[in-house]
Image (tube, rainbow over all chains, first blue to last red; front, side):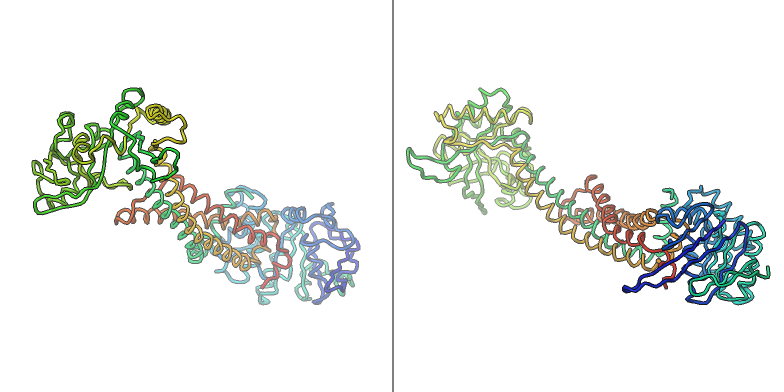
Length: 227
Length: 407
C-alpha cells in the first residue's frame, strides 16, 4: 500500500528555489500495476526517487506499508530500499564482469542471506522472468539487451519487495524486446507484485492497469490502462 | 554484510582487473622488499659485529691504565698512556676476587720483525699461558706459551696466521725457525688458528711472546699495558667490575674514584655501543626504504580513487539495493588493504630473496628476523587503511541518485 499526501520537492540552485513537485497526492493498492507518465521536466524522475526511498520530500507525507518514509534518515532509507523496494533501471546497471546469478543474488548479500539460499532464490527469480537456465552462469555483459533487462528484473524481484519500481525499463530496447519485457512485468503483476512503471511513452504506459499523468509537478489526469 | 561475502566481493573486484592490481601493488612490493632487505643487512652487520666482539672471549672485562697525572699539575697525556698496572695487580685480582675465572695481563707494542728474506711491522704481545682460554684462541700448529716459558724468560714466539704469511710467505712451515724482534732472536713454537678481525685489532696479525720475556727484553720495565679479566658468568660482570675498581684504588692508594689511574671496561658496554651504532645504521637504511613504501601507498590511493570514479554507477546501484554507507566504505577499504596485503606478502618474499642474494654473493652478511617480517605485514596493512580511507569514504558518501546517473 502506497500513499502520497501532498508531496512537494524544492531544489535550490544558485540561490534560486525551483519547485519540482508542487503537491502530489495518490494511492496505489497492493497488487496494482500503475504507470506514471509525463514528458521530461514534468518531475516524474524526482517523484520516482521519492517513491524509491532514494530521496525525501520537502513537504508532505509518503507512507509505504504504514512506514512514514518521508521523515526517514539516510540509514533508515537504505533499510527500506533493502527490504521493500526493487529497482529496474533504463540502463540495466548490472555488474559487467559478474555472472547472471551473482548479479541477481547481490541484494541478498546486503540482507545477510546465507549463500545456499541466495543461490536458490536467485534461480527462482530468474526462472520467473523467463530467462533460460543455460544463461545463469554467463557473464552479464555477454547477454543481449532484453536478457539483461530480465536479469535486472530478477534482481529487483529476489528480495520479494512490496514494490517494484521500473524507470523507463524499455528505453534502451527495441520495440519487440520492449514488449517482451513488459509482458514479463504483466506476468509478475498477475502473481501479485505491485509494479510502478515510469515512462514518457504512451505505448508503454498503456500496458499498466492505471495511468497517472504528471505535468509541471502536479497530477493532471488519471486514466485506466488497457491491461 | 557478512565477512565472508565482503571478502568475496572484494576479492572479485581485485582479481577482475589483474594487470592494474598487479601494477599498483608493485610499489608496495618494492617498498616492503627494500625494507626487509635493508633491515636484514643492518641486522646482519649488528650480529656479525657482536659475534666478533664476543669471539675475543666471553664475559670479559678490560683493565687499562688511565691518564698520567702529576701531583698538583693537570697535564693530561691521554688515557692508556700511563704506566700504572703491573703483573702484581693482575695476580691480586685473580687471588682476591672470587667471581674471577681467569686473568690475562699483557704488554703490547709494535716492533719490526725480521727473518731471513722477509720482515713486517706488527703487534708484539707479551702474555701468559692464560691467553688461549681467556681470549678464546686456538693453536693450529705447535704449542702456546707455557708457564715454564714464563718462569725461564724463554725467547719463544707464537705467530698469528697473517704474520706467518707476511714473514715466510704462503704455505711455509715456520715451526722451529728463528725470528728477530727488536734485534733479539726468538724461536717460533706455534701458530694460532685464524679468527678474523674483531673490529678493534686483528688477532691474526700478531706475535705472542711470554710476558716475562717481553718485560725483560722488550719494554724493560715491570708494567703491563692491559689486563683482561674473565668473570665466571655474565651476571657477575657488574659486581666484578666494581670489585676490581675497589681493589685497584686501594692498591694504588687512591681515595677519590674520579682520580683513578686506570679504567675498567665491561665487554657488554662495548657490545652495547657497537649495537647502538649498527642500530642507527639499520634505522637509516630502513627509513630510506620506508620512503619508497610511502610512494607505494600514494600509488594505492591514486588507483583506489580511479576505481571509485570508474565504479560510480556500481556504487549507486549497491546503494539503491540497500547497501549502507558502512557496507560501501568497508568494501573499498578492504580492497585497498587486500592489495597492500598481497603487496606485503610478495614484498617479504622478494626481500628475503634479496637478503639471501646479498649474503650468498658475499656483499654483506644478512639476517631476516620474524619481527621484521611481521612488522612489514603490519605496515603494509596499515598503509592500506591509511591510503584507502579517503577513497572509501568518498565512495560511501556518494549520493545514489547522482551516482546512478553518472556517465
